[in-house]
Structures are given as C-alpha cells and as structure tokens.
Length: 119
Picture 1 (cartoon, rainbow, N blue to C red):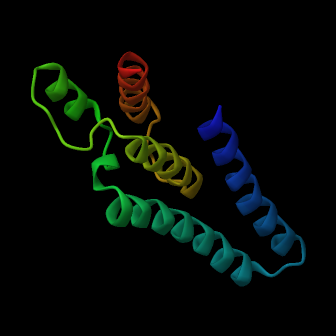
Picture 2: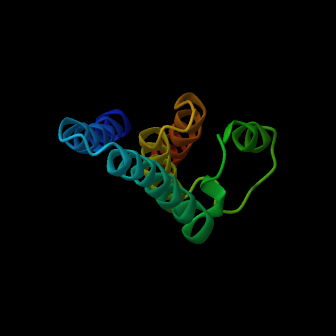
C-alpha cells in the first residue's frame, strides 16, 4: 500500500510537471525537468541506503535465505532496515529504474515476522 501509493504519487508529480512544460512548448526544459526528477529520486534512494542503512541495499532475498540457514547478520531484521528498504524502493520505482518490489517485500516480510515473533 505505502510503496505503490507513494511511488504512484511521485511518478504522477514527475509526469504532470513535464506535461505542463510540454503544453507550453518548452521541450528542452521539459526534458531537463524530467531527467532531474529521475536522477533526484534515484539519488535519494541511493543516499538513503548508502548513508543510513547499507543493509537495505539489494533485494534482501539472499540475506534472508542466509539467515534462515542459521547465519546471524547484524542489522538484517532492524526497523531502520525496514524503513530504508520501503522508502528506498519507493523512490527507486518512482525514478523509473527497472526494479521489482517482490524481493524487497520478502525482506520486509521477514523483518515484520521477526518483530512479531519477538514480542
């Protein structure tokens, strides 16, 4: 719900802004704005993962499989990882990068399941 809704909103903002510029025949500016939105969203997702929570990088499937095989990975099932994973995939999808939601949702589900079983 969160990821799909917010990535749709961010994408709609990107396309609506570009469409307004195209209607006014500002083609070069529309291109620059569109590329800036795409790059900006990708930079936000990348900065979030690289600076705040590196454990949220990638799909998370291999890390979850490793954990299920008995290897403890520090920070794999933290709430901070869940937040960065969900916000990161939201901005990644909104930027237009070809990435699926399935892998990150497997990791997010493992974090939620781990949290529920601990409480």
